[in-house]
Amino acid sequence: MNVWINNPFDNLPGEGRRPQRYNLLCRALAKAGHTVTWWSSDFSHATKRLRRLPPVYDAPEGFRVRLVPTLPYFDNVGFRRARSHRLYAADWEEMALDGVEHGAFPKPDLVLTSWPPMETADVARRFRDRWGCKVVLDVMDAWPENFARLIPGPDWLRDILWRLFCARAIRRARRAYRGADAVSAVGVTYLGLAMRYGCRAPRHLCYHGIMRMNNGATRYSLDETEPLRLIYVGNMGRSYDLPTVVRAVRDLYARGENIRLDLAGTGPREPLLRREAAACPAIRFHGYLSNEDMQQLLADSDLAVVPMFPDSRVAVPYKLADYTAAGLPMICCLTGETQALIERYGAGTQYRAGDQADFIRVLTAYLHQRSRLTREALASARLARESFMMDTIYPEFVRFLEELCLEITKDTKDTKEATL
Image (tube, rainbow, N blue to C red; front, side, top):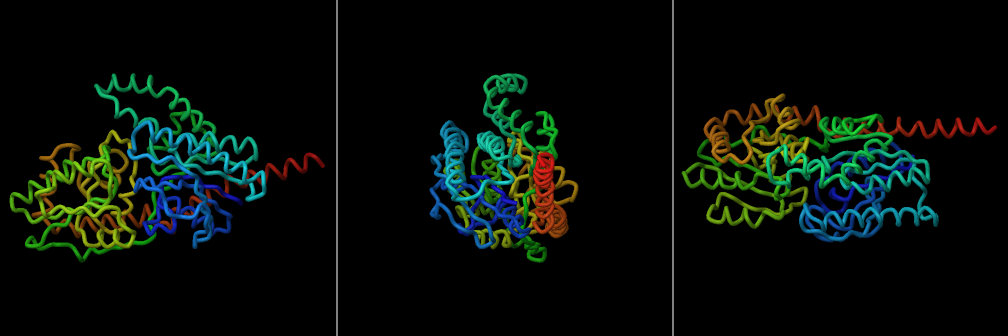
């Protein structure tokens, strides 16, 4: 079958960075013998820079990448990003219709579009009306639900105002969930959300995948004369409780504790974090790393942090897969599905978001009970093997999509037989 994937956020082949969900899905589809086109953006969501890649190119793993011109934005929350998404969806539709009409490429049998952005789901359904393809909504985040956290006030008032201010987006979400031929998601949480919106189509769970394990359980700094090496990998935006982490490490270091914090990534709150850490040589900023450098930094660490505020409504973040692939125990303040996974496997410890004293309490326990590291590292690696290995979860995802598209073949055959 001919499959179109649309996601403008993930790392692309040729950028030298860690292959993420849609790269791995494209690989699995291509390996299964399907023709795959990944429609993405010429603007990097991670680095907030225009990409230095050709507008159309073939990935070594057997799929094609097509880039859609995209209005740059510099904050993950704001009107400019919303406008960028609208223009991106409109340009994708125009490019796709023009290409099929003029024979540059064939029409798709299946279109899978990530959620967010919200606007591409409407475009995908219009493709279905025109070409008869199947449409799959792949839920990466709870949009527009996570907009509620931007509204001040108590929960009851926030809920009322969110429903008022986001009424149009809520209608769009309801239309997208109910109008899809199938819904896939990175967490059980999001499949439940789809059902609450009225989705009755087939649903599939596929966590973020990892390519291989990098289990270094014997490398841990069990000697308290060596620094405990804490790592954070990811965005430095308002959804992350990073000020609490940085201040806690700074204060522990000032008290004479043997600790180090490495932060890999970038984002709008990086200047604030650098100011907080300015007088602390134990805190190091690495910027946005290549895949090779990121893997090395993870291998040189003892303990990872998942400092996402619960009201971000993230189910299972990318960093959970990255950390467990490296066999790292985790300190986490994200509740819900992520907390449940970590606790089920005994792969880390929870702290209260925004509570510096509680974070220090948890971190101090690791500083002075380092035998925990090896035990929890083995649990973390088991979580990775059982939930995130690409060789298991992505072939299952491909089979789900193939079964959905078998209906196309059956419907076409039935139509032909009825006309004979």
